[in-house]
Image (cartoon, rainbow, N blue to C red):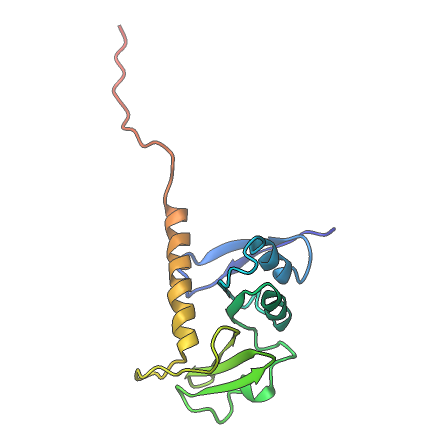
Length: 172
């Protein structure tokens, strides 16, 4: 079994550098299924980033009565071409596609950029009334992931090491 590790840089995150270590390729689905073991039939919603999200995972979660919300990589073969292309897309526009009890959303936050999401918890795509007209699933995702990013930052900057001032030493 080979071990794959690499340093990752994500400029938009509070903690910009991290290390990922995986013993197998394409292990994202197994990681999520392992971490949700015991939650079967609880009806909970699981939030994942694009490393873990896939249609296959969504189907497995449905069997366990769990829902899934996650960003999904644009190179997934299951995604329709019209959702991943930026050509001809208006800024703040959203396109939806419905497949096997799942909603796919493609949001254009700025010219030439697309954010794609997979959702199995809502019946239809809802758009916010704000100026940027974000789909509700992006607002939900950002709310949860902001908490995860903040916790990651706090954990990295916190220490359990006891802080003491050095006392002067007197020798007799």
